[in-house]
Every structure is written in structure tokens, then in C-alpha cells.
Image: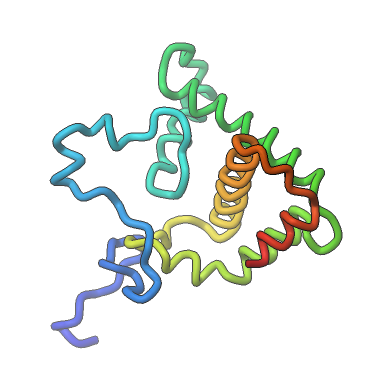
Length: 163
């Protein structure tokens, strides 16, 4: 290995992972340091950059800690809402467009999706990554649909997902 070439370490940040595909960025420290709470999720965790917060919430719950009045409780409540959204979404799709079908689509495009992030997310196992993308995508779609007056039927949702 060339001594001038840095050794690649899985999970180590590379900026960007793919300049042509990169479209998901971390807020720069210069902004984050001004008001960290403004850039820290309060209720919904979307994407891998704050995945450790979910893990901490689950660990606290497993340890029997009282998390009633902490951010952890909000994260865990939202995890339950994600399950409700997933069920609602699953009820509107059929055929090859089942939840398992969407998982296969995400798995097929996993490498492309991963390169959308500014930082390497190699530390996230494939199955966990696919589940994360599925649940976050459905959460966003269901939130949009629930807040609009547009009543999309099964076929319209499928057409939209294929776009």
C-alpha cells in the first residue's frame, strides 16, 4: 500500500463518499456549536446520524431506568408510531409492492443509497440499514399523506413509489 495513501478504515468519515451522489449532509460544527439543541432531534430520528440516540433510549429502557420525562421517551413513542404508519402503508400496497418487496428494492439499491450520505455509514449492518430506510421512508410518506387532503389510492401510491 502506498504510504501517501491513507489507510481506509470502515466507518471512518470520507468527504464526500461519492461527490456525484452525495445529497445528505451533517450540519457543520460551526453551526451546530452555536446552538446544539437546535440541530439535535427532539422527537423523530431520521437517518443514521442519530441512530445512537435510539440505541441509548432502548438501552435505558432495558436497564429499567425511568425515562418518562426524557427525550428517550419521545424517541420510543415515535418508534411505536412508526409501526402504526408501517401497518397503514402495508394495508394499501399489494402484489410485488409488499413490505418485503420494498425491502428487496432497498437492498438492491443499498450501495447507491449509502453513497447519498456525506459520511461513510459502513458501520451500519446491511439488514439494519434496509430496515432503517424502509421505516423512515414510510414514516415520511405517511406523514405527507396524512397532512394533505389528497386521497391517494393504492395505484397512485405505487406509481409515486416507482418514480
